[in-house]
Image (cartoon, rainbow, N blue to C red; front, top):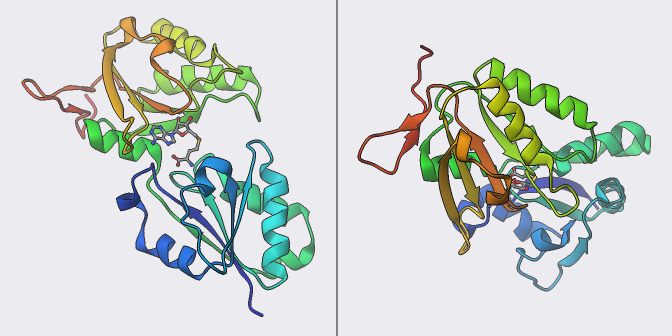
Length: 247
Ligand code: SAH
């Protein structure tokens, strides 16, 4: 019984953006583990057990996956987008680092996926064409003061910034706080892309200038891309881009 564990990214939503490598792993799997809406994207079939679980139980889910792989199962842990971006791959390695030493000997692979900011950027044009960073606005696993500092320093360094988890019912103020910091740091009308449910039937893209940006334009299915000072629309088109060179 040669068990293995693949931590796979399902991409932003559209099946056409699932890589062949991830499809192959799913076709060989005996078990699929993940957050309920992500597991729902995997077609049921004979010989495959689906293990949907609620959000915020990442470590339990990771340990469960490692146990099954050790028992000889072929396990795929699914994340949306890329599994290494604010998702399950790091949770698995946290469990391996602190858990049963036998887990460190398992056959573990991370299979990349198209992360939300790249899918959103491609839809809009090329807003990440120059230097950029990504910040998770969730304060689940870090203090708000660190988030505030990173937003301010990223803006001072003139990165374009992708905000993941911009807003949720539990944290309605996260994005409003970040936008206030940006307005304090950047006295311009740089564009901000609100990209919701990219590559799904609910996809919606909206570009506004920083002074007009409101937190209500985002929800938990939105990734927000804040331009750098150089980001702009290509005149006469719908394309947003950041030139490759700094001023
Ligand atoms: N691993 C995922 C990110 C998980 S964090 C990835 O690589 O994309 C969840 C956040 O990702 C959401 O709050 C939202 O900000 C973003 N996101 C995920 N899918 C998205 C989509 N289809 N469109 C826009 N944003 C998305």
